[in-house]
Image (cartoon, rainbow, N blue to C red; front, top):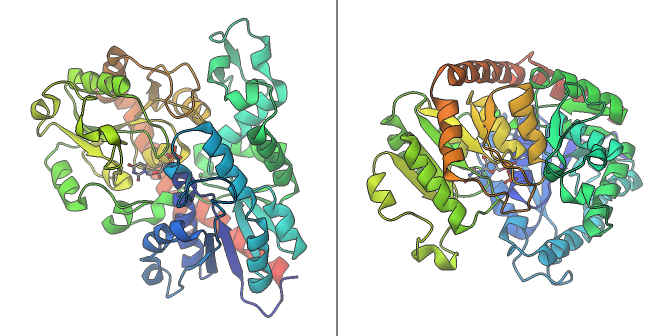
Length: 485
Ligand code: UDP
């Protein structure tokens, strides 16, 4: 049992992928800023990401330092190449992804050793560690789940899983309304994740099932969102789950200085000052930012379509391409049309590798965001008040798209129709040109921008003292403290 004499102490245990680690680094800063002793548990090769991301927190949190503890990642035991400790560093083969989840499944014992040693007050563990609920229970520690997505996506996927509406359609492209979910939200069978509709049992489907069961038995969930963004879905999911859920986001807003915004997850491939100088030379709301997160990776012909579409739009842009030094074909550059970069000089900036995303989105020159609808990116776009072109690829991204286009009405879909892991559905240059123009130019674009700016304003208020997210975080801490003492 957690001892009364010990200080209030939160353990955070994120899954080893950037989309999961980045918000948890921010969450650690938030807890520490409230004076809470905070420890992040991770593996040795992921530790530097957290130490860099949280280096400024000591000054922001009245001297509370975020501790980072490591446990060995059993790469070899699970048949992974040495040094593979992050999902993003895996070569894109499904077999290795399975091995990665297998390795993650072997972390229970080392985690339990740390829980025994430190006796934290609570454990916030990623949804991909279903066994964490039982591990914490052994020591009388409450376990909270962090999914890293929106209330909307949690609620929508719950309805799709429960009612299986995709079974009643005559084709992959016939739209159905998601049953029971407020708002008459439409999607198609082709957009439903394959692990839900394929009806086959495998390691991933078993893991997700265990994750659902563990969530029901957990103390509750913490959500990177703010109440005003999706009140109907926050209420709905709380009711469905029958558990407490605390909304404490947008987590990215805890990064206030440029230096903090520039380092999130990885060292950027462009100098922060060079990037800001480029943006400073542009008019307000004039630049389209194009980025597809840390996992999606398009083939060369899709990249070429994006290049041609952006050029045809005549708009200024920053385009992040996940091709770096490690790619064999980087020197060939055959994914770019002939003479593209020369023609785009001063008009379009290509960042090869990792961009300082939040720094760019928050700059006044940014005017629109072409996103794969990963939840972190979507919420960062909302917090920056930007209209979006939604280009979902896989995971729960098609649900996030529906929130943006059908509920919030701050974006237009580029037209991806199929859920396909990593590479996504293909999109033609004409569709890209049309969609970016729609969010940047004209009356509709202005309406979307004005709605997005309104949400950004509400997001900022939510995290200030007395705001909904700030209050919920404090309510969570107080509740855990009172059960602790
Ligand atoms: N990100 C970044 N620079 C990049 C690409 C991504 O800083 O070049 C960050 C982005 O700001 C977000 C996270 O990586 O916080 C990506 O998470 P998201 O949920 O959007 O997508 P995922 O990578 O999980 O598909």
